[in-house]
Amino acid sequence: MYEIRLHSRGGQGGVTAAKLMALAAFRDGKYATAAPFYGAERRGAPIVSFIRIDDQQIKIYSQIHQPDLVVVLDSSIINLVNVFDGLKPDGKVLINASEIPKAASGYKSYCVDLTGIALKTDLIVAGSPILNTPVIGALAKLGLFSKESARAAIAEMFADERNLKAAMMAYEELVV
Amino acid sequence: MLTISTGNNAVAAAVREAGTGVVAAYPITPQTEIVEQIANFVTKGSMKASYIPVESEHSAMAACIGASITGIRTFTATSSHGLLYMNEMVNWAAAARLPIVMANVNRALGPGWNVWAEHTDSLQARDTGWLQVYVATVQEAYDATLMAFRIAEDRRVYLPVMVNLDGFTLSHITQQLEDVKIGDFIPPLVLDHKIDPAHPGGYGCMTSSVDYVRIRSDIERSMRDSVEVIRETEAEFAKRFGRSYSWTDDYRCEDAEVLILSMGTLGKEAEVAIDILRSEGVKAGSMRVRWIRPFPNLDLGDRELVVIDRNYSFGFGGILAGSIRAKTGKTCYNVIAGLGGQEVTYHDIASFVRNRKIGTEEWFGVKI
Image (tube, rainbow over all chains, first blue to last red):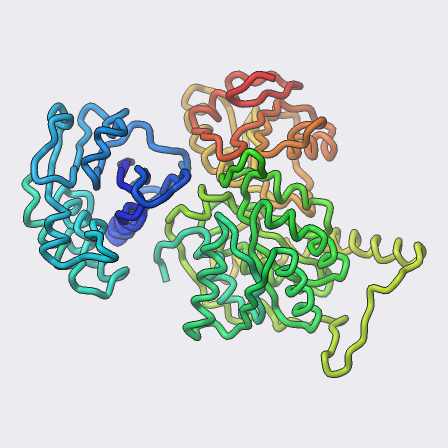
């Protein structure tokens, strides 16, 4: 089983990103679950979602304490929450940033400027850049699911082509 | 089609597929997605139903009663304080013998204010005459909702059915879902005692104890008859759609010497604990109790029992453990765990079995 913990802020689309991840893995022929952890959520507050991918049916509902991959949609959360908590020794970190923050330098970290991509592709809703579809492209590049399944998942949930464009831009920009 | 869905959206999809005619509801966390989705279906025309937004849960059930008694398929959804607020009408719906289906998204009761999973809300309604089933996967939430209509509307039953799913843990998780084309699995509703609005009549007037006792005993007779209807319905569902359900969801029970009994998603997580215990040489099995009303005949043999209750009856104990003791005469190790969404992992569940002290009750995470 591959376990992913996604950190974001309320309103950034973390919950939708988690669903898209599950859908893309599912389109790869895997079993997948996406469970947002709901606290007293409000716009801007740090929130966390748990995604599991496996070849067999997933029976676990509890939180992920030792993730294989940590995804951080807002790098400023690193100063508030220990996003690396429990990360497996060979675990990876994907951060929405133009360069890897100092705090993440001790880990197998990757970064891509998802916010910049959202702005470049005019993927903005109510004044906020949309990160949930670009991050799917970056995760496909990391090998979480195939590029085709990433495209299929996005197309299934969003008609607006800017989403797909931004995801493919993130796929190209992420250096692995 | 095979796709992915949340638990809430799966319930809404089943309500549409069942051909429901009236939905009256009031939103409440973590149920809101269900009625929001149904409202979407109705607005966009993919569901031909009357959607009645009401000002409270009490009114929601009252509207469902009014709709159902005209012989139309009726649904509502609620949770926690919403269920408690509609309780008077919940009792009424059963005694009026109305085959209403309700999804209750299990949530703790306040204060302290808490929106997370716990079963005390629906278990407080266990004596109302409603049938109650508890589910553990998105697929099961969908399947159980479809079956609920057929069971409720069977002439041998004519009682409402409550489908219970864990708040957030199941209502908001995304898992895979295979939907079905229902065909004639749910026959058209024929309500023998329906009221024709064109020729109105009424009942529910002052009733002597002689008739009252007959009416009450008839509810219990139907509750007993529902056992066969549930069995038939689940068998027919398996035949048509390939997914089997029963009174309990059993995992590695055949040669088990110790059994975990639980309800809802903890019962699925328990299966992971069973695999760990088995690898340690402990012959353990999991029995997830699905139906609480009618309460099933459990074949527990001489095995040791670890009962996990995500609920509590103050001054008494865990409600599942108490029910098992009453029905089987067997004693157990009762663990109160998961109240108010308390995190309970498969490691925790495995440790409940390792540290079992039969005949005692323990609260996970606290000492009392």
